[in-house]
Image 1 (cartoon, rainbow, N blue to C red):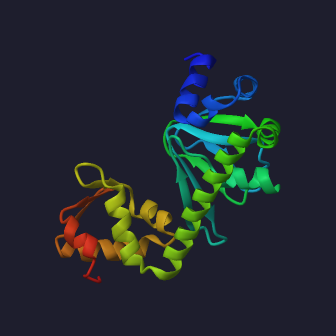
Image 2: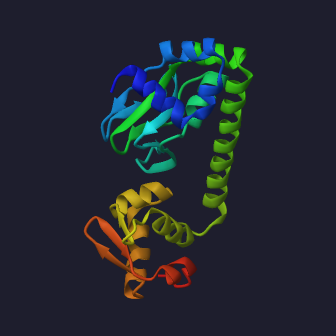
Length: 225
């Protein structure tokens, strides 16, 4: 796919860009790059400098922190038509990345250099409104995550997570360790809850997968292992 084709795809996924004045669209076309990350590749590192405003065109990245004890905590994921709130934060306020980001699958990003981003923030009301509105929405998601971690029992968060991640066949493809990382807990706790739900007949635990057998019961999560 040519650079021009990628630009048009980018504009299709982020329609506000196509509404900008011709001179601003020209700046975007000349400045943007489209890095491709294979699964497991790093988008940015903890403590790294923020050189680009990142917008996801294809695939998905995972933004997380690792504690001093080695426990991974998922902060959020970025999928197609999404932007990265930590990137926005660093570009607006300065400083380095407070977390790291890794591609979970083959991912295509639109990377707009920091200098171009700041120029358009100052010159384009439409671009500025898009960035700030998107940033506000993502911040709301982060506060929702903090609220959930602080006030929602783990078994309820685990049940919600399984239901949200299940495919059309009711299967979640992830190890207990991966699920624990998504929820900010340890594998042993997740395994204990899953074992209880399997005994109740709500799920079936397979190698590297969890199969949901009773969505209604799991949604109610009334059984405590």
